[in-house]
Length: 579
Image 1 (cartoon, rainbow, N blue to C red):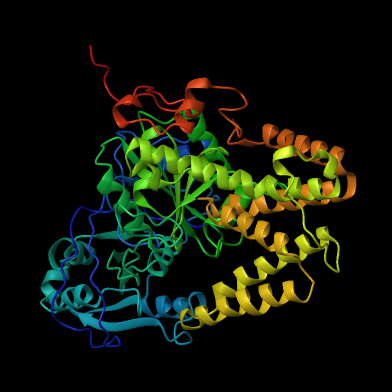
Image 2 (cartoon, helix red, strand yellow; image 1 turned 135 degrees about the vertical axis):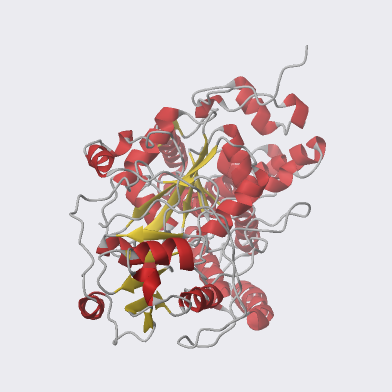
């Protein structure tokens, strides 16, 4: 995989009111952001970095952060690459830029489809008696900035280029703040495909790389799966730079680090690993970097989910081993506890590592209310989740064996069993709810009400009247569905549904022994499960009384002074102890 350029100058893109004559006239929203600065690595330093293992790479001498051309837009803060190269990059020899401009144009036709792909723009011009060619992508480049660059180049004269043409172009006449020289063809092409622009000069084997990106993006809005009554209404979008800026706005900590790498031989998807340097467990961080660096795939068009499968989620376990969030405040809170966040370009979800089963059952709304109300909401949520798991299997067991029913539960049980067995009724109801859930995703909002009436009246009521289902099956199935929808983690809700089906099948087949054995097997599987080498059932197994108490009771902010020990943070105390 080709290297991705790491060094850019500090500055802010300044546009002009002109419109490029060679580009399609369109309105674009101007997105400006600052670039990190960094020293340029020497060739011998790059060679030394290639010989190091991927998981053990360190920053270049001086520790200066840098900016790399990412498909998400301009760099900001301390987005860095390690050693000036990507962890998962393969060793390849540099491909020089052709000396003659005609050879450059021919190579562009062969490599990127110039004159074939309509969005490939190459504008040939002459400045100071020197032929030049501007190479960019229509729709990803900032027209105003490139127009200003071309306008300034028209002032060039032949005498200005007598000694060093590249020096005159870069230092004297190109007003773009983020401009640099590039000698490697592959790195230059990757930069342009990420939204940048390249200026070729006839007779020079060095091209100018101009960072003038204008990527399509929607505005931040509240995530539909993590809504709160009180709290911020912004959420992550599909642009990487916007997402890390939302977190940086909440964490103005100089120790916050953003490290950028690329995954995918063809897609070259940008992946950002975020952490707080003096809080995160270094072994955890290196383990995540090593897993990501070992991913060798053609691409990640489905972004974070494919990255999870390639690094974290291995095997056929239905339980999620990472936590997804579309809320910047939730991700910032996890970073402050010592967790690691993984951003993937083109995805509005962010992975936080490691996670536990109890962590997936908590919601941001509980921390937006008073401790008493937050605790009450947490208890109601826990009750709904466990009811969705065990209510149906226990009810089926009591119906099959009335002798097991306590005296207080004598009212349980249907008066009529229906025309089909109860287990089959539950199975059909589960499949029916899944079908309605999938149909609601693909149903236009204007038809959602009509679909709800069809599901409630035509399917539910008529199915009971015809004797296919009994009333109790519909009632308890609805309670279980509500409990699943109350689960904050969508992935955990789906996994709990599989668990419920397993328990129902075990009860229908083996009665009490089936319920006991299946429950024990599932608990054993959860106990053996690990998320980034952390126990999945913590703080229950291994037992941690203080941590379990903080999960059951939503403690006030000033009483919650310790970070979770499962993260093994470098600083355990959240705030200074008062004497």
